[in-house]
Length: 168
Image (cartoon, rainbow, N blue to C red; front, top):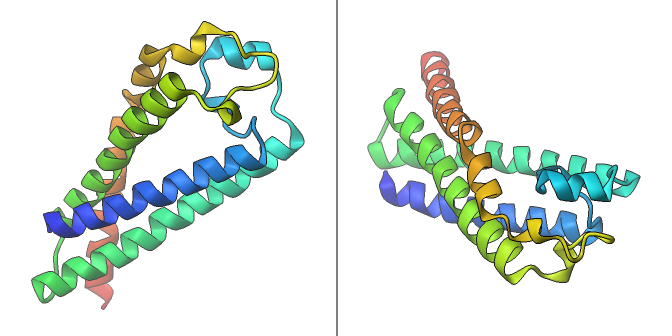
């Protein structure tokens, strides 16, 4: 089960990276809602293109989660030769989201956004703001929301699997 979770977590992180970077490359302000408050305040409202890019990225992200969840639970059933109940899907969901949260925080937020800070992440008019290096801001956004999403995905996958097994 851990191997399946790890494989799907790597796929999830890769897909998430493509979605986020694609969104930012199409509309630099598409992720402004996730920037530190001072940057958001100085930059102002998200552009129409940014809103569209955010919406598309959100739909792609949700689709990615659904596809990976369905395929992951299928692989768990194959590995266990049958029903897997609530526990394994719960753990799979928690591990999937935990991997993304840690990857997003460490690689995308701290290394890419705060440390390397490529030009496509820097919004016009905010170039010299020290908040781009606010590592603590990104850490604070993980709790409690990230923990709740992580547990929530586990519960949803566990319950969905119980329903699937009951009707299949």
